[in-house]
Every structure is written in structure tokens, then in C-alpha cells.
Image: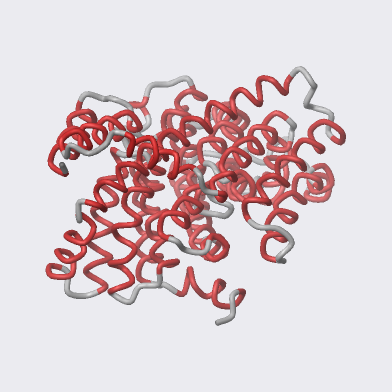
Length: 425
């Protein structure tokens, strides 16, 4: 059964069949090869999505789309520009900083790419930056959308590995800030070397005026994250609060969302949510079948025999996840691999929350690496260029994040210090 499933999935990937269909077809053929009851597929697909924390996914996607249409994104850009926009390379730094702030509400890197990229990619091009560089920068910066909480991949890891989502969220701040600051430093030095961005400060608002304009937008992550860690509501309930807040701000306060806009916003959100849920359903069935076949135990024993130390285990897992992330969508990879790898990590004495951050940061790289990087496709759509044009500009960004990944991997306190402080043990 396992051989049929894996070979079918690999063949489908080679034929560029969508990830969800590839995983689902491989699972169905595996059931057929094992002469099992086909009703298992329906039961396990339903069970995979019949989990309360997953309700946060459509809500966070909807909140991101409401922020984009309601003028919240634009005001966050002006606020970030007022802080870092006055120095050389300030506009690319604004892109990174805005994505960091937007990530504290949206939970989705693709939503971040469209919401912020629609504003900043044209601005970067207008200030003389190459179109390919602007697209590569936006795609990379938007990766922070799944690292800084709230994060949809963290929710999926928490559900799959049975780890506290609240602990994952609080642990994500350290790696998120590290990657954000590293990217800002890199783009500043790179722009100085290239001679770009000497006039990035033209037309920026003063810090006070930008803060006043973005006040309601900046209050949003404070309410969401403060409510979660203050024990007022759960991460899932926070997603519904985010939608309500974005709706009120966009319609009543900023008055940029009209009633006729709601249908398009809801339709876009439903389609995005359906794609993710379809992947989760199929990946859940796949994970159930390979678990029943004993694959996780076999892989665990093999890893323990080959990789004798935690350091080697983490290095091997990082190398494997980096390659896997290039070809498999992040959500599907987490749902399939988390139940397999998390118990092995615990055996090596690795905190499951720390391991979850390693998985999320590593697989988030798959969003900006060809051939299936979803952020790349989104950024190229906004910039109206082909994917092959941005690869050269993308390589330095990938190297920066890989360096940060090594720090996240081998300095666990970066992730766990704040978690241990908030969740006193």
C-alpha cells in the first residue's frame, strides 16, 4: 500500500497535478491496493477538517482581505515608512517592517503578499528599484506572515502534533523578529552597495501624523494578540474578533469598504479557504494511511539509528524539509510530516514547540523557492513579470533566511524564552 501511495504521489507531482489532488488520488489508490473499505476515505477526510482550531483559517484569511480593501494595509505602509523610510534603502525596509506588522493579524503569507505588494511593489518600481527585485523582496518579506503569530501553519502543526497553539504563537515572536531584522539590515546594506534608494524618504509622513492615521490599524494586532495572551479569548476566537474589527474599521471608521465590496471580499476568502481545507482533508487521509502502515515508526527508528545526536537529527530534518518545501505546499507538508517527525524530536529531547518553529520557518522557505513557491506566484502576479526573472534577486534573500533558520534551530531559547516566561512551568 505504501509503495503504491508514494509512487502515485511522486508521479502526479512530476505531471504537475495539484498537490491536493495528488495526495488524495495516492490515498484512494492505497486504500484500493489494501482491499480496504473505501468509506475510510470519506470518514478520515471529514475527521481531518472537523477540528475547532481550523475554524481560525477562513477567519484570518477573511480578516486579511478586509484589511487590504479597508485601507488598513495602506496606513500600515505609511506608518512603517515614517519609521525607516528616511534612510537609504528605506523603502525596501518599509516593505519588511509593514509585513511584520501585517503578519500580526493576517496569519497568511499569500494574503500579506497581495495586500502589501499591491501598494509597495509599484512604489518600489517608481523609486527606481528593478521590478524583479521588488517582487523578490515582497515575496520574501511576506513569508513573515506565517512566522509571526497568529499563523495558519502554526495552527496546523498544533493540531497535527497535539501541541498548544498558544505556546506556538508566543514562541514565534523570537524567530519572526530575528528574520525581520536580518532582512531589514540586509536590504539596507545591499541598497547602499548598489546605490539604490537615495530618495526613498521623499513624500513620507512625519511619525506623529502617520501614527495618528494608522492608529486604528495599529490597535488591531494589540487587541488580537493581547486578547489571546490575556486569556480573554482563544486563538480561534481571536480570528473571529479580527474579522469583526477589520469590518468595523473598514466600513464605519475609514469608510473604504462599501456594501457592494463585501461579495467580492467574501468570494475571494471562500475560495482561498476552500483550497487550504481541501489540502488539509486529503493530507489528513494520507497521514492516517501511512500511520496505519507503520511508516512513522519505521522512519523514527531509522532516524534514531542513523542520526545519533539531536544536532545531527535537526540538521538532517532541516535538509529534508528544505527540499520537501520546494515541491509540497506548506500546509500539506506540515499535516503529513508533523505526526511523523514530532515524536522523534521528542525522543531526542527536543521541545515540540521549538521543533514546530523549526518546521514552520523551514517550510515557509518553500513559499519563496521555485518551482512551487506560492509567494513567488503572488508577487509575480502583482508585479506582472515572469517567475524566471526574479530568481537571481531571490537567492540572497534565501541565504539570509537560511542563516536565520540555523540560529532558530540551534539556539532554542530564541523561541522558548518568551514561551517559558508567559507559560510558567
